[in-house]
Length: 215
Image (cartoon, rainbow, N blue to C red; front, side):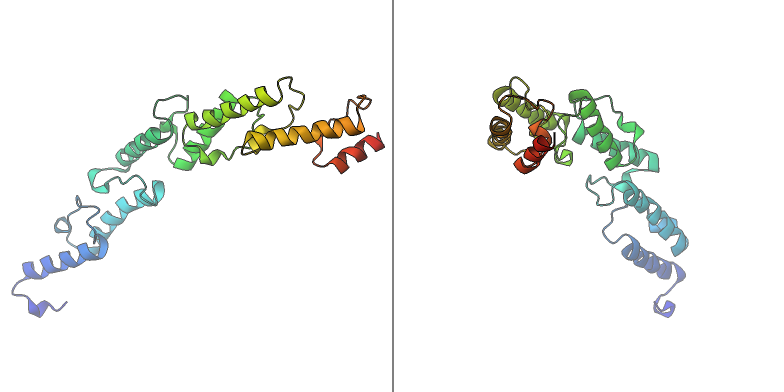
């Protein structure tokens, strides 16, 4: 930009500041930082980048659409982000996981998932769930209670308790796996001579049969 094109210094500096704004905050994401408050480009750039770093650190994709210009310090921004995380993953505070103990969404979610398991499935019987699919504990409980219902219907005596129903998409698949193990047992060990060899421990009838023959 040629200074000779301007009548005085103030006009030149104003034009410069408009260029800084276009360069560092084109979409006016951080309107609270006014280039007119800075005497040089480096200071303005540092002020803008400092706030953008908060987003890059805690909400890189700006999923929660917090306006950086609303915050004077990083901790204020982080506090509001935590409120958003709480509203998404534990809106009714059904767990004892405190969101204030976490700075990153993935760490908070991981802690919540562990809490769900320890609270609702302490024996870790249902390990086949893709837990990242669940947003809240209520989502998890819908699936968990569904699998418990399958057990009541398909294996009320708990004979096939080693089979994890959470690995199957529907009850028909789960029932089919149980029926296979029952058929293997009836065919190769109907008198329960090898009661220490559980067909649930084997993924194929050949493996089960070999175990019986080697016993």
